[in-house]
Length: 275
Ligand code: CIR
Image 1 (cartoon, rainbow, N blue to C red):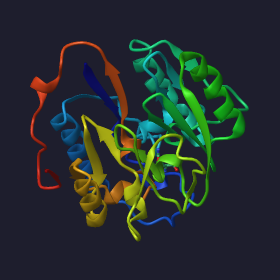
Image 2: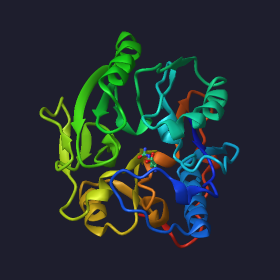
Image 3: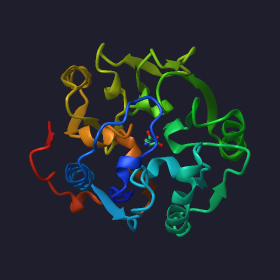
Image 4: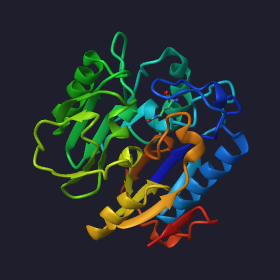
């Protein structure tokens, strides 16, 4: 099994990013790029091969590749993002994914952002909120259910995406911010609440049996470590100002093939650490 992480550079125009729930504050481009570089290093440290797409300085939110596709084992679904400014981002992603998976597309009037789709084993939780509409969630279900996925629609309020407030932590574990996600039934999962006052830490990238989480949320890290989970922390303060979390900055593509464990390299710099 090998893991590819598709990323894209932070655009020079990131300061003009879409914002839905936060006030606009200046983003330090160099710092954002440095933190993104450490994020890519952390992914390599966890055994991923990182492929960075060409930069797109005219597309402010291009770094948030997660929103442009949903990767299933059998298929890559090219999304139709909920805001028009982000739709030109999909072309470069579709081109790269076309060599890795058969492609399917979400078509108008449906909208779907990848950040609203959380895969946990063979369950897809799909958030209905500011970016993904009912037609988008239904279009994804029509593609995924015949492949054996259960699709669960979840109402999201007060945050950008489902994955801003719900993350998979491997096996039957879900990390949840109950304030924003109306998950009425656990659907067979064990629900772990994000500690009070650490709401943004509910966005965790679970990869290589490790929780990659944003720096600055010590109680969440303690909570996950108390569950016996391995944690790696990455600073994400600049892209957080653009309402981006850690899952947003990569598309993870698993494929059968030689193990990439031999490719592991330690995370570089001070902003990451592994326990
Ligand atoms: C947007 O509003 O679309 C971007 N500024 C942030 C997207 C973050 N993506 C994600 O949570 N999956």
